[in-house]
Image (cartoon, rainbow over all chains, first blue to last red; front, top):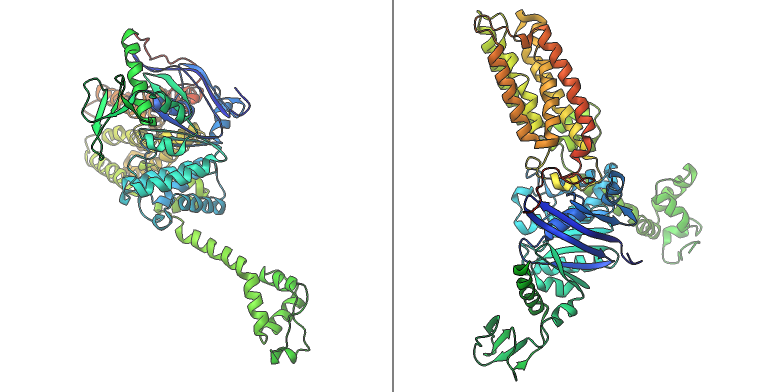
Length: 289
Length: 299
């Protein structure tokens, strides 16, 4: 663990029956926003649940802020500095947004009523729900409920934020607002967010971890992930037979990802290209295993 | 600035010899904590001096904003429901009352339904004059807290289970708080319904120890198989036990006799001990410290 790492997961293995969800995963988190990418079933949610102390691993250790989370005292220390928004946040639907966040604040040991209510107002303001404080959760849209869950995670100004697909169901404007909020938070804290949206990673993350088949396939900066596709993205007037993915762009040419033919007109790859090729490169290894 | 304002254009101020309260005094006044003599002079002065009134308003702006913020917070603050208000009136702190109010089986609607069911069972029992023991009521009443506990906590039951699990609040404490509240609420209701069985005397309370035993057993099993399955299993065993021991002629059963009551008390104590020893199991979805027993190795 380097001096800057606040949280480390070492050699983490989690099995559900015959399925191995995480297979010896080691990840360290520093201050800043780290993106967790991976296809469905890659183990992203399992990794986040272990880090959030919701799930016990079969083997491996979680260390956070200098304490091992293996025993009750360590877990409590981590929980006091944690904000967690699960993938499918559950709500008491009869509660208003204010009541729900207030309820979570109580679970976060805020017993002083006045200080707690001030904190609830602060986090609801932070996620842009000032005017919906009194609305019942059942009357809120999916995107708004996501923001309520994010507000609940922000209660108590945690040092570690674990967000499981927080941008699902947000419209473009909400997504931009969300990016603003997270980028600001990442200036002083460790944020780990899992997502399917490569744009979120490009826009927000200094670091990206790609998980596939329960293993870490990439751990580096977004430029490094894009570089995986260097020399393997090109344009052509027609659809080539060899491309892994090919589509006609608005400019009328085909943009192709895969093994480029000799003399092809190469273009600068994006993070998405790198991600696609990384998963593709990992696939034969899966078969061999 | 510590001294007086320029008073040249204010005729009223001139009549007061040019004295104006310094900012420090106005600030203390705005905070509401000046000595009595200072308060009088500020009040007498600002009643006639427009500039000092304005200055006082400026200095008090922060304090006023804070007051408004508090008013806002109170306006936003959830208006407690009937159960929450009752709990607070009984001396339960507001934060604990809120945690309990989120329990489905402590809602007014649930408790009313429970009361209705108990009254029906008590009426059926009291009109069955051939029975020596009011077995329909005694069989049903212990199941009431069981159902309440089954929906009070746990994955698949409490929608905020995962959020609660990862918060610092002790999960076991939450389980105990909710279970005890459900027990108290249902005991009061069952006790009230027992009043409909006056001719039974104390025998009408033979549901109490079985209720404790079944609730304790459910909690102990819940650490292994979850609250819902635990409640269903315990409830079925109780139903079978009642069905196989009740004498159809007079409604008596060993379960409601002293021997059965003693057994229930013993079971309740054993279950309470088992729950306490397994309390760490309420903490995570699977135990953190040891490999999980139920998981099979991959083939």
